[in-house]
Image 1: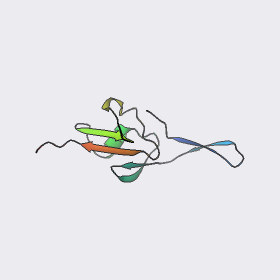
Image 2: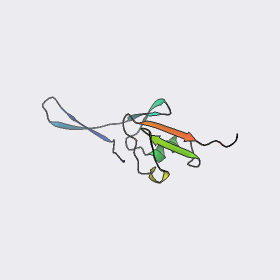
Image 3: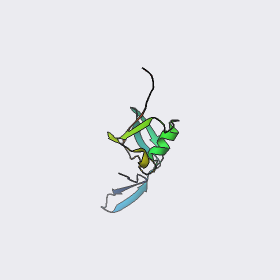
Image 4: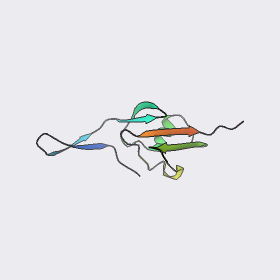
Length: 90
């Protein structure tokens, strides 16, 4: 489930492999397009959004990410991330 998005390998015109380092990764968070640094984890993204971890659930590309993996799962280019908070009351 962990993918490193810090480097993008492409073929150049001669068919040789060129490694280029990305300076930003484009992701969609709760329907809003944003850029994050390569290697950003789910935990870092949740913190960047100003959300605590209590009562928060995260799905990446429609797959729920267990809180125990937030520090390990890296959001990749084009990922669709949903961050939801539980609200008490009724």
